Length: 262
Image: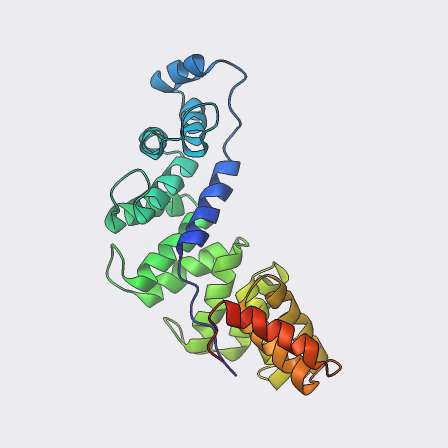
């Protein structure tokens, strides 16, 4: 059975994080841009957040990541969690500001200490990768647990993988499966793949090929290359599903188009 590597905070994931944080920010005030800016300059944190969002999305003003960072920083300095988290993302990506992992750790840490699950999850990734802070998988697991217990899907998947590999925590297949199941049920494609393979091979759970194929399909339909390949393999061999070589080829091709070597 193949094991997924820990889900690192790749660029597409970070951008999704940024969107999720932005969506928590109140919409632009029902007033002119100049009025909004005046409020922001006067120290109104909600106006600062709205202004940062406008510059980040190019909503009513020319898109300007540097200006977005400037206003997120002002909100962050007032202790605002959304500002702190988005500022951490900006420093991690180098979006509107030079890439600075140490600064990302600092701002994620401030938001994480206030209980923000997104910041906790991304801070854990930086500890796991040793970016901006000495590599410390035990610390990564500690933050993933905090985020996972709040329902953060990426953290749940990464925690499942950490337990499965014994990375930063004693290896525990039952605990790994528990967290992968939570993440899979919440739509995490990598965990859906892992859960599907566990059912197909009966690893830590009673063998159920049909149930395995169900989860592999969910993963594959979200574009997970491993899920696509193994769903193709299931169709090719008739494992948990009626044998169908045309359907096998279709899923093999999808995985192959993503560069999946097998």
